[in-house]
Amino acid sequence: MTQAVDRSNIERIWIRTPNWLGDFVMATATFARIRKAFPDAHVTAGMRPYLRSLASGSDYFDDIVETPKGGGLGGLWRQVREMKRRRFDLAVVLPNSPATGIVPFLARVPLRLGYTQGRPFMMNVGTSADVRRHWWQRRDGPRRHPNPMPDYYHELLDQIGLPSHSKHPELAVLEEDDRWVGEHLRSLGIPEEQKLLLLVVGANFGASKLWMPERFAAIARHFQDKHGMRALVLVGPAEIELGERIAKAGDAITLTKPVLSLSALKALVRRGALMVTGDTGPRHLGNAFDLPVVCLMGPNDPNYTNYCMEHTALIRKDLECMPCQRKICPLGHQQCMKDITVDEVALAGEQLLGLTP
Image (tube, rainbow, N blue to C red; front, side, top):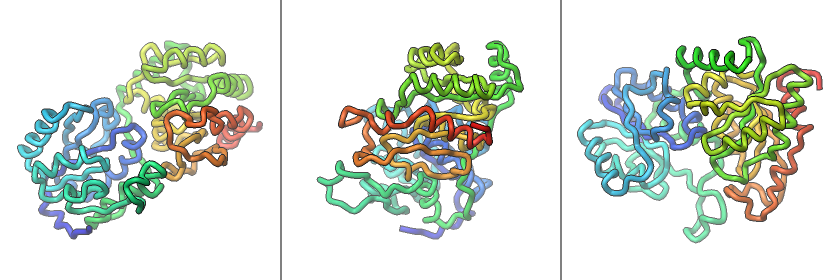
């Protein structure tokens, strides 16, 4: 379903952003494309509260409405009433869930752009990326064709004829966040000129994406002893014990006091020299700032996230069980991560940096 849009008639726009950190970062070029196409429109973003600081410093949105997870019918109707009050002309719904599509539908937003799979009556402009199969087959494979998420998002905007735009993620860092990170690093004895190795050791997705802690520690020791870098272990609130264990074994520093906010994490990633990570949200922050990234790809299909790969070395093993897309290895061996060795990760990082192995 495509529809030519008179952009001069669009004055108020609602963008429902993705819910995950990495998906949000991959969507930032989409936000920029909308802003460029509608420079005078008032753009409101609906997003998970924890993602708010990712947008700091950028001009994509004029205001933000937090859309917490859950809330039941009461929360849904509050969102509907708020959307009606604001009288949006266009709703761009990037997630493909019925829960995100029903709100602009009930609020009677005239133009509702989104993926139609599972909610054809909710979106009146859009397309379907669904893999053609019967309903009873949906658990046996991906629900949509495994194209990179930026392509997935930009395909929607093509449906209303918006001018093309780069798909490279676009993030900004506030001066105050950069200053705080610099002061925090100095308090840890790390000078401004020190080259930083960023180790992202956790994964909100699930245990199937985790690399072995002792191997992260070995990578920390390798780049510190051989190349004079300083290793920083990055963790979320639920990963503090894991991070401290890896830091102790690898003579690294773990940033847990405090755990970094997303706005501070942006500033730190921009300062980094190299990142070693699983298929995680911070990987995409690295992409946004053209940071060399060694990505350890386990159970997930890399085709969803293979974009802007100029500064990325992706390490993946070709096993019959891959990609399973499961949070916990259904076979119990996690071989897709165990088969990734310290030596090949170290070599990939050195090649990205032009260092002698």
